[in-house]
Length: 270
Image (cartoon, rainbow, N blue to C red; front, side, top):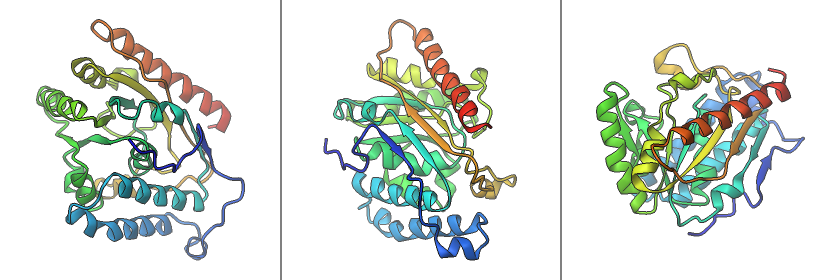
């Protein structure tokens, strides 16, 4: 599997000085410059997706364009553990992560797809969202309803296992919705179950992405306020196998996320 070399080292830290676009200044550093530019980026790549030409490299590069755009609007990324993603790229794995905002949805392809074949487990509402449906549909995601947990489990185990056996890693956000509060009781063990069934390793991932807020109105939930004083943190742990029923591995993932969120809250003063 070819590494696209978007992230050549183990970490990505936003430079101290990043040029702020004139458009962002003219719009008084409101949220709208960023969101309009992201929508224009999506529109630029949509024809490729409709023709079935939106491949892994294009997904990674278009996502990286978005990451650099977010940086230009004052976001400071602190990403670590990238070497764990590029380790054994032809060996698929399940990536399990907390879910805080839309930011990780648009940035993760730059990180993961630049190093390995990957897709997401997503809600069916995303496939109805004109911002994401064509591109995500082109990347063969696992689509769940979040209404019937039993049916969702069957869907994830069936299609997820098929994808993994074909060399495609699967990203899962076990929480039912995006939230800034991490509650272990709401973080289900779906990812552990999939990794165990498919016989692949599990990668724990932790993120703090409340730079990009969630909107209060459902149809505008992706376009919440920007909190430019809040750094973005991401850390990707070493993948590990599942033994037994997976209970200990699930606890290990939860502990990984809780420890990072606690550390980052202290570092950022938030």
